[in-house]
Length: 420
Ligand SMILES: Cc1cc2nc3c(=O)[nH]c(=O)nc-3n(C[C@H](O)[C@H](O)[C@H](O)COP(=O)(O)OP(=O)(O)OC[C@H]3O[C@@H](n4cnc5c(N)ncnc54)[C@H](O)[C@@H]3O)c2cc1C
Picture 1 (cartoon, rainbow, N blue to C red):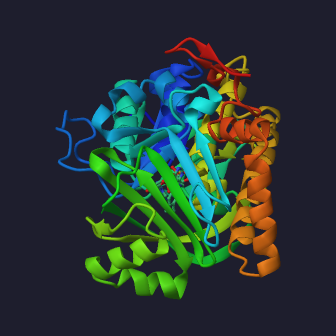
Picture 2: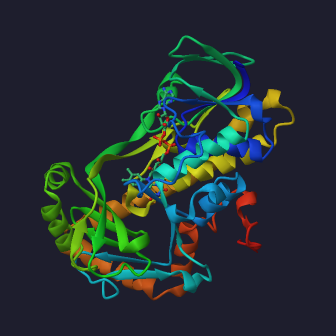
């Protein structure tokens, strides 16, 4: 096997795989010059496996910018259409208010001239088709765990847990929240634990979801219903650890009843159709994103509260920004140039910090039961609802249509639309 690369990516989650596919699609690297280290490869990655019988419990809400990026690197069109669901509206409301009434805020894709507000995509299908694209593009998939990193003047050496050693001009760390690469590169983190877990499951509801993402802010944390095909929804319920642990232990009927009550009956009676999976939540950001010959991206660089479904979207923007910056290298020998990597760091660290701080602020604002704060929230929601321009800007920013985004994501090549 080739052990000499221009770029080695550690971690074959969606972010690592999308980065690899993008480097080849943007012609930053020749296919065989990119290696990706995957701890485990799903057995059907290379095979032409049939579509799974049902959706996996993990789903992601993806923005227009993420859709464009995945189209650009050839992943989007390969995901079976029955594993993607476009949603058209969003309604958020405070526990003390009512959906589409006082204390609520609604968005409709028609208000911003878009066909939808984004997509709910099955996580397993997304991951699988990212890896298949990587493999089809000629990227070298290396099934192993990364164990050691040694940065030299001209190259970085990466030790694997099977004893092999790889050499590369640049190392890209996409190994998630607990990133070992980050630790080995000596990059610290800041942030705090939310002392909350997010419970995830699929449900069937008595009333139709109307292609709408519903989110109720409770004092204990937000509860979201993301619409799926066939009248089902995916729920994400964030609650204090002890409460989340109690809820996760309920039998399906009791958990369904708890969801019906917590959602204020917005979709009628809720019936749980899958096991419940739990994720611990924290706010974490890396103090640096770049070192000579190494960069961090995705959850290795930032972990945010899932209340606005932004973590993966932010990570995909990291990928696009890094690809754009690296395309400025005159020669593959300069891919690890610290000046170049610092440009990526300056670009994405400020954008991600802004998003993480905003999400953290929202979490604090909505989990505060103080009546004065509740009054302020209601007034704020009403004010935004009465300012169509501001509402449109919020929706367009959430879709990744505005902001400091890489130029190749500004145009929808598939539909010939461009955004400013
Ligand atoms: C409940 C919940 C709901 C969410 N919903 C959304 C949403 O709707 N929209 C959205 O945009 N985001 C959402 N997110 C955020 C999203 O899940 C993450 O941002 C995203 O999965 C991060 O992807 P990643 O590839 O950076 O990391 P990961 O998915 O953690 O992948 C890291 C990879 O690195 C590998 N790895 C780790 N260590 C090593 C090693 N030493 N050697 C080799 N490989 C290694 C791992 O095996 C793994 O494959 C949600 C998060 C939660 C908790």
